[in-house]
Image 1 (cartoon, rainbow, N blue to C red):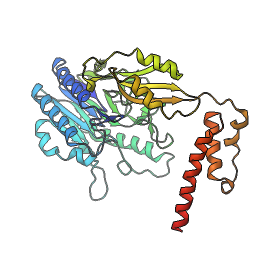
Image 2 (cartoon, rainbow, N blue to C red):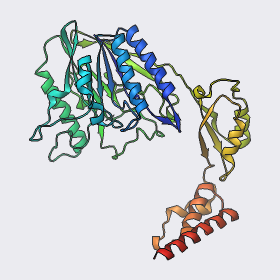
Image 3 (cartoon, one colour):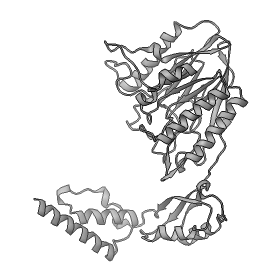
Image 4 (cartoon, rainbow, N blue to C red):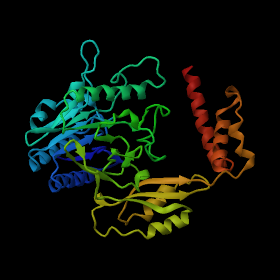
Length: 417
């Protein structure tokens, strides 16, 4: 039984205000071809199918069109889709009764009985080939507060609750298990030690690290754990069988060097073969120009060297991040860059500005010796922030603008009093 592990499609994502319908469609077309070429029997999608919990009609149509095409290309394929933190669990499950007749399983909601007991059976899916069960899938969606068991007297209720959830689910699945079958699990979570980009807000820890799940949370008898949430494909804890597939498209410029892939493995007599990564073709590349932050003159020279559009479709042009080193804010910066690339085969996505390291010892300590808040005027805060960031005094014209705005705010507040 050949199983393909994918995750984090983020259909409907806007990349710096550019829609990615074309890129996602290219990926889905490639995926259908891969299902056929590799004779895939089971497809896992480990969460974040959509980028938003309320996806557009076009994104939903794109997803269900893919499901239909995949089922037609591989009539006996089973598809298991779990909800991620970006998905609406109930919305993802809404067509469940219709899809299950086509061997498509949507898992988003952790159901409980009237007494609050988790119905683990509904998360266990038999994976069948040639009329017999070859494996059992423990299809776990993103677990929100209240989905996992509440444990008393523990240091980390979330991490320990998630671990207990997997243990209980495993024990339930074990009661169905027969020799020669494999136990496989899915999950959408942040594994302890997973490598992420410091600049990627989509993967950033949000609870001080307490939501990190150790590899030991997954029972040893699980033949494979198909994870989603982290966009960089990787093993977890050095274990070959616990993996993030990663996202098929870069979700930010911080992922420019990621190798985007899907993972293929085979189940044979309850064991799996060594997982094999299949690289996803890049349809629309990301460009950082210059490679390092540079002064404006160097930036403009680098932009001049970009290829000319020459009648090419701008809708498929690379996304461009321009990296500029400034001494002070430059109001006309964007206009200059847009003029420089007006005829180039790129789409301006982001201007990333940086400033020289702090050089003014007179201002370097200002923000580190706080005064009582009530003694600080707005203008004092403004001056300190500006001087700390730019290592210069506030320009006269900018100071005048700030004072004008401050006066307007003051008069408005006095009028409302």
